[in-house]
Image (cartoon, rainbow, N blue to C red; front, side, top):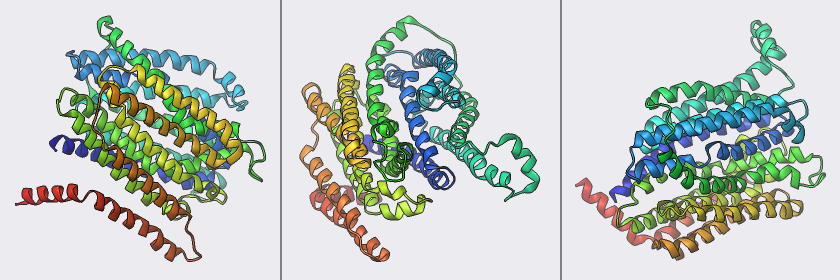
Length: 507
């Protein structure tokens, strides 16, 4: 129980920072949908999908390798840190330079003629992200969750403030709506034809401001390249690199490839890039599940490695999985049945609601991703990371195949199907091989029941509509209460035990 409390406590800190951060970032949705065109949002969706993919190459699995070798191999943690950070930094500088020099050619290839500056900025963003990766991992492995969370939040606040400055403030000052005295200054720095450009520029400036703060916080920086440390780390990390590439294909390529898979004219009055903007905006509504998954991953990865030598860890891992599923299925139902309300708050232009029906399926897809993170611990702590590559590669193939077969037939829903199919298959494969090599007593039957019931309630609550919004709100949220009763009926003994422990400690 004490280990679960520790995990829950650190997840809460990461979760609060993620919730606050994602909520702040979430507030950019009405800004983007109100001030930018659907075509700009389509560009934003595609370019950030590319950034996510290249981020994996720039860090090449060294974060997880650092966790493994700094905690479970009997090596000096500071030496492992300095070697890891040096290696990632050198690779980031080389790859960033290559990307910077080829920016114009890449812009032409991806149908952004004359916009090579976008991809030069992408090169800087990726290099800085990579330079921050190992220092952030060091904060996590040292249990400095609060410091980690505060720096992440500050980064997000800088990014949001810069977005508001460029996209809203400069726009209105340039037009003469606000503060005429600032107009000469704004005219020197503002380009009214830019849209996605300012999103990237804000990201770049925010990261550049945070980098020195993170280095000062971590302190123990130093240049080290020691073969006896880096050679086994490299061997451990390489399968994780390919796993990461396949995984990010699963996670973001549905957004990046959507506009290329959708036939022209599929949605009347929309270009494929505009439809991609709608798809990307609705994808962000699944952020509620994604932020919980991310918070859990931040806390769980170092926690699992630290518990690797505990003889009771299979039972502990099973218990973590069980409560993870219960919590996340509650969240899925709560978000899905209130999607109309959420969308009305954040979509500031017409047309975006066309993609709402895919969101419940996306929520389930992200939940399955969280389950996969739980299941994948077996090949990380047994050093059998090659399995990660095969499983995620199969998932990546499924993603691409489903996108190019289902998007032309079902549009937005076809894109969501790729996420669901990919993570569902990855969970099945990881569970099957995990139980053969490192058996964990998961409550599989109960978990499947919770997933199925919560998914049915999620879609049912979303689909049921009347002409009265207030009545709809109460009807929809009855589904959450119904699910609560259902969970309690199956977990009565567990809840009674927890309540008894709480009362005993209170006395």
